[in-house]
Amino acid sequence: MAKFYGTAGTRRGSVGNEVYYIQKTQNIVRRLPAFIHNPRTVKQQTQRIRMKNCLLGLKNVKSELDLSTFINQEVIENKDNAYIKNNVNRCSYIDKRTSNIANFPSLSDNIVCSYGTLTTLPLSIASNFIGIFLSNPLEGDVSIKTLSIELMNTYTFLRNEDTITLFYYYCDNIEYDANTLYHFVAGTQIKNMIQVQTGRKTFKINTNNENPISMYGLRIHNRLLLTLQAQTPRGTYVTLYEDNHPCYVLCFYARLIAEDQYNFPISSMLYNKGYEDMLAYSKTPAYIDLCLQSFDVNLPNY
Image (cartoon, rainbow, N blue to C red; front, side, top):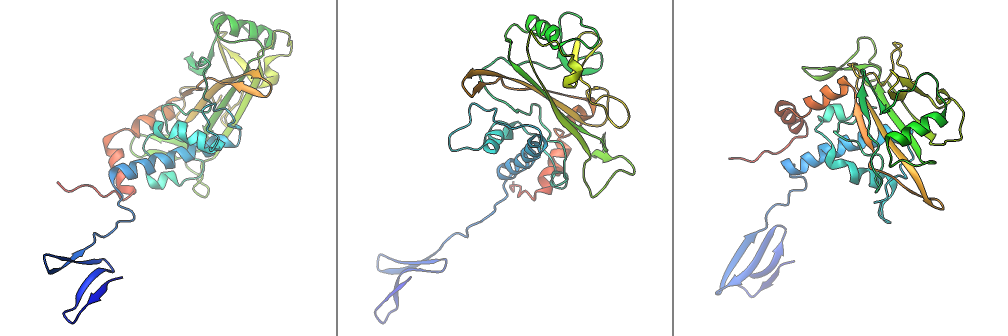
């Protein structure tokens, strides 16, 4: 509040966005700069774009994964916070309209669903399928025992009793589009929602388990690849690489280190051709510019 002194109307203090003070016996008024609540700078909006993309990924995985899988989760963080911390800066650009479509797949070079100090179990592409590569051929519906021995021979960092999880996220009704990032398959756009097939398959490395791998939703492809049995509405497998419907697969394992305490690796990720092309499109200058415009970025004047 301003204060007035004497008949000359001397003022001190502030009224609204004006500040009054005396300098060398003169009354001086200074206007406060207007506070911009939402400056929408490139840096600010870029972070918002990535956050929208990251939240899509969180929604993608939460229905199937518990996400108690980040050993770098702080005491003050919940599981969602830990996921966002490990993923937001990995996310690509995505325009505002697309980011509001229910079930749209998060676009990222590596969606992280676990974080720890164990060695990452990689995913591979072999014979046009995504899965875990095996160095020696297996054939048919082998037992978990047989698979376990082969996995530990191929990946010497794995141990008996480690629990391996494969997660998949497959989009049934959109395809990559070289002109607009994606398009809905004709006749399948219902309430502007992506129809997805998603799930996880988990099994424990166990050299005493004689049950067949088919009981766990797994199969051996071309004798050298452990992959998923899940099929699409067209009768193909979700792990087929040459598919224009975007799909990604995540893989991690858990190791019991103390009572109710587990360690994890940084999870691995691979994706099919449709997802790969969408991800590449999201990094093009023209699409990045479109994304910034869709979030009303205030570009600097030069």
